[in-house]
Structure formats: structure tokens, C-alpha cells
Image (cartoon, rainbow, N blue to C red):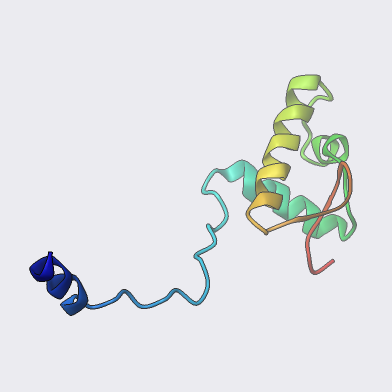
Length: 92
């Protein structure tokens, strides 16, 4: 036990992380298109509005796909959701 304790105390402690790494924007082009559409609009938008801005048919599968991507961007801190279902860039 003494040897193990001595060994563990001799090991260098890892430096404390000042801030956890936040993942960046996903590589898929759809995320870039969403961010571009939000920047061009300059206002918060709903998933349905983004479907129209991206020239996607207004179908449940498209709206839900965009909504899930928007939620992912919110969870990564790239977008904000000021009201439920309304998404915006933090700087807008």
C-alpha cells in the first residue's frame, strides 16, 4: 500500500481544464445552409420558415429534420431558442 501511495503521489496531476471544449459546427452542408439562412433573415425563425427559405417542400419530414438540426445547434451553443420553436443566432 505504501508503495502504491508513493507512486500515485509522485505522478504528475493533470492540469485543470479552464473551459470544456465545445464542439464546433457539424460538417454537414445542411447546417451551413441553416446558419446562412438565419444570417440572411436577420431575425429569429421557425423550422417551417427555414424550410421555405431553403426551398424545401413543407412536409412533416422536412420540418422535423430541420427542427432536429436546430435543436442540435442550440445544444452546442451555436444558436439560441428565445421562445419555444423560435431559433436565432446569439448575435442577432
